[in-house]
Image (cartoon, rainbow, N blue to C red):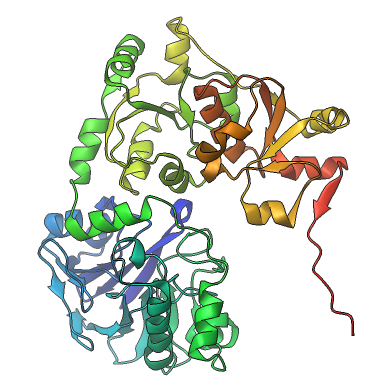
Length: 470
C-alpha cells in the first residue's frame, strides 16, 4: 500500500493518493484533476473511489471531473445530500482499494457530514486517519461555517457535536496512527494550525489544545469558538458549488484561454465591463499597469485574497499576467469558484505599453524613506489584520484591514497625503490598486512593509501581556 500527501501550499490544502494492488483512491482532490490521473497511470492503477471528507468551503473540489474522467465512485459520509450521483456511506462502512481497506468514521462537528477515513494496510494494520477538517495538526475545524449555509446549525450546536466526535470516535484510536488533515497553517478553516502537515495521533493527544481530556464540553466549546474571525465571504458559495455541482474545469479553461491583443482587450474591457485582474507581483505592478485594474499577485495567497476582495463569485474577469502564467492564473481562480475568466492580455503588460496605451503607476518608498517622512507626522494606514496590528504597529497608524477596505473607504482622505503599508508589501499593493481604481492619487506605499519599518527604529506600540500582582 502506498499513501501520499499532495500538498498545495498557496491554499494550504492537502489531498491524498492511496494505491494498492492496481487500484487507487483520491481523497479531497483539487479542481485540476489531471495530476491525480497521471499519478495513477504511472502506477498502472485504476482510480476506484473519490472520497470526500465533507462539503468544502475554502475550495471547489475536483470530485465531479475526476469521477467523470475515470469512472470512479464519489463517496461521502453519512447525512450528505449531494446534488449528483454519489455513494453516501454509513458509519463503519468499509471500502476495499486493492488489498488496503478504508473504514468510514462519521465525525460531525465541522459540518454534519464530516467524516474521517481510517486507512488499514494489506496486513490488517491500522495505518492512519484522513481527517478532513475534523482534526488538524494543532487545531480542529472551526464549527461556525455550516450556519452560513444552514441557519439552524449554530456554532454552539456544531461545537458540541465536534466534542463528541473527538472524544468518542477519534481519541480512543491508537496513538501510533498517522493523522492526515485536509489543511495546514494559513488556512481559514482553523485558527491555530501547525506548519507541520502530518503527525501521530498520540502526539496530538498530548499537544493539541482541543484534545485535552480534562476539558468539559462547555470548556471545549469556549476554547474552540473563541478568537474566530468572520470567514471569507466566498466560503458559503464554494460549499454550494460542492453540493450542487459545477461546470467542468475543461470548459472554464477553454473560455479563459482566449488571447486578446491590446486593441481587442481594450474593446472587451470597455464594452463588457469585466474586472481587469493583474496577477503580477506587487513590485512589477507598481511600476506600470492598466488603469482601473486590481492587483492580486500569484506570488502569495492568491486564491484566498481573490475570495476576500472580489465579492461576486460570478464576476467576469480579464487577466493581465506574466507571459506563461495565464493558465496558472485561471486554474487558481477556479480553485475557489471564480470560473468566469473571459480572456487574457496576449503578450502581457509589455504588449499594452508597446501599443501606446494609457498606463498608471503606484509610487513606492523604502522603509528608510518612511522613517524620514514619519518625522513630519504623516497619516499612516496599516492594512494588516487586526491581530497583527494589535500585536505591534507604528505609533499613530490607523488600522483598516485589507478585507474591510471597501467598507471603510470614507476614512481615506483625498485632500491630504497618506502612506500605506502591510507586513511585506503584498496586501498594501492590493489596497493601493483598489484606491487607485476608486480615484485616490494622494498616497505612497511602503515596499517592504512593516518588516522593513521595524528595522528603522520608528516609534512603535507593542502589545504587553498584563501581569498579575500577587
